[in-house]
View 1 (cartoon, rainbow, N blue to C red):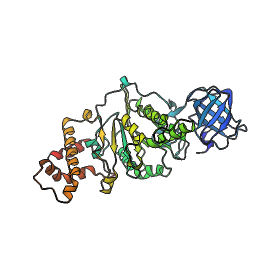
View 2 (spheres, one colour):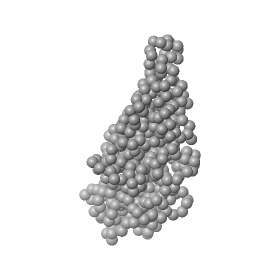
View 3 (tube, one colour):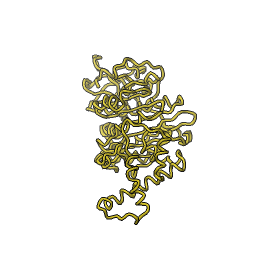
View 4 (cartoon, helix red, strand yellow):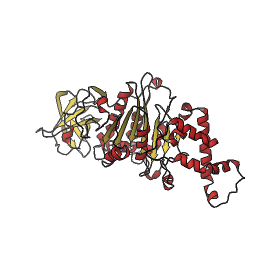
Length: 436
């Protein structure tokens, strides 16, 4: 992204600048050190070259006794020692409104889909405190995503936060697109953070079929600066909060939390933070709840049901980002590379996955059928070798006999085409056959 795109003509920069200015004293590839100003953490500043040929925006991320460090939203090429830095008198806001629906935008809500300008009148702060604990509504309604394995065995509730954990190339994007297409939520906010630029049109045209009705796609690709990738996630959440405050139920999907944490790792390490766990500084782990806890159900307002994808390198579920995410979220969906080898898509490993609110949003019959399904499926997996070599004689274990009889049904239940959509009631009726 060029610095010219980050000048003060942006809609998001409704910022009044003070007459006081500072100067650049040091430039590194990721940060700019300034002096002459007394800013606060989180302040937005304009960086301007002396000949006015280059303008950019940055955010104050660290303060010292002699000055401050600024992380730029763009890149530092073109700036020199002695260039001017102007301080704003307010934090960062983004323009929001119904005009965003059906559009593809960058974190500043500027259109990148070639469909013309977006006209909005409302503004939302990028950074906002999560919903107060005592103002959160109870999650007591199911949130259908039209996928049998999730609706039947890992039922999520309206306002729940779920993680989708998978290695590379296992099928996260396909599962995301199925959730976006199948859910009946009136508003869908999709944040594509730190992914390849090639994947954006691919996701929209191939996975979503070009249908963006009721959806907002917020994009910050891997070639954007670390600050753009970091705040791209917060900007997308602010869009979801805008619609939630209007009493609407919002589906929020973010791909991926890992790239978001990596962006903060770049910023933190550049500021001198110590790398603690696998190179991640403390601020990377601290940032996750600040984003994730903003999703949920709020009394008297709407809800944000969130799915966060987490890339686990080498399918290692003990990765620090995966571990921290699991502790914050209300459930986790684990995708298995082994199931893709068996031709089961979406490859959801129901043994390692869980929904913490399922018991509160489904009937007793539904819950019991899901428990039966998981138990029989686990029995099959435990005895798979014995069954394949013919070492098990039928009649020795009544429950295992039942699992063998239901084997084809269970595998078919877990399979689903990317264009298939199942109503929640139909999934319940289908699941009930496990006891039939």
